[in-house]
Length: 118
View 1: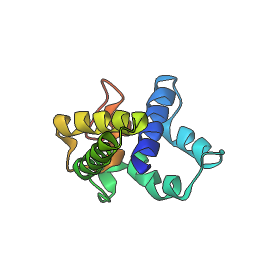
View 2: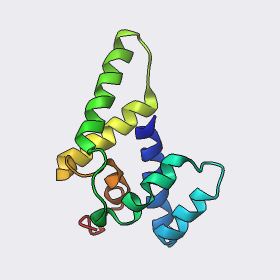
View 3: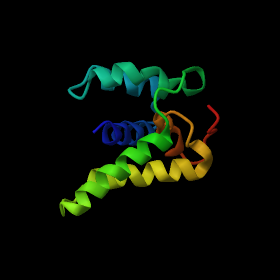
């Protein structure tokens, strides 16, 4: 579930950035909205200042965990659409060299042409 929330936050931050809204302002709006949660408060700095925050859970580990969930779902013949989408994004991040980065890196990777080191 955290991976799908991460996917939604990453997409939201990428979309608002493309609309010209500062990431900090967009994130603050999330924090006071109906989708606010302890996770959003906990991961705030990882999304907004990724180079300054320690890695809490790597992209590669999150991708591995989602693969385990997808394997179980396949046996149960249960389609996990959101999980599959999040897994694809995490796989792309790993392929781009972000396997050891915090999984919040998706927020940067969804913004084409941006400085990924930031």
